[in-house]
Image (cartoon, rainbow, N blue to C red; front, side, top):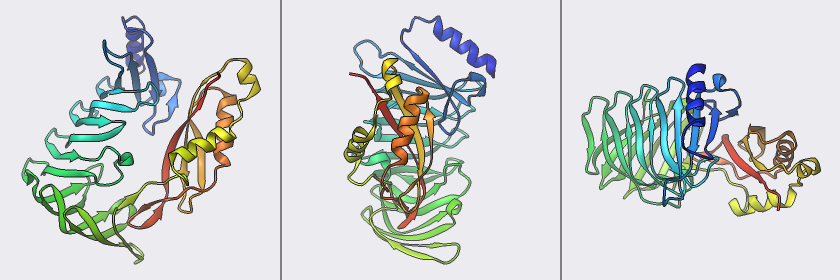
Length: 318
């Protein structure tokens, strides 16, 4: 596997593309420096002629493509326009479109055997991380290709991310959830019954393995949030970061990417560097995030839940 990454890097170095960036990553998204220890490689190439979008390519260790898309930024990618992902076998995993790094419009997902799993239409580009079900269910099939939902009508059966079990099921009318739906999140030991009307979640009642019952409405999930939102978090970083003097003298700039866990009470834990720039900038980013006030925790089925999060911290000299 080391041979593939080394050969690919040599090819890129000698290619006609200038100013391209190459990153080595683990499956959990952590950046590393050694290609032979990476799970996959990401290559960012300059925009095509008359375009402002960078070309993003990711490859598995076996040399097969993992992702092909376009981004407004070099690192981390913020996807824009057409994007396709692939299984390690080389078969297509998903295909669709993004606007401002959020899914928008037609989106297709496939089983590992290559058959279509479902076709969705995302309708709201303002929904952060698509945390809310801001999509219409256009089609849904089982792994053999049998129709379950067609043209937005039918009985939907959705799977967990690894296609191990049916995670949610219910009636679809005009592409929207309708009536009673059953939910089973085995990885969280939660089952739930939800009532929908014209796609709106009217009510939900979940029960955990130990018998704890929680009622909720409006959305199955809520994303964790810094109090005051993204703008307030940016203000917190700006007001608390001090540029290390030794890094200033060396004209060191860059973007440190941190990952951390937002606990059920909103406190931050397991804060660590996902992508390093330099020891001085890394430590300053860590220092400021460790001082962060509590966030509003994420929820699932009305219950607070731990969520892993990542943020970029930019250091630029002016």
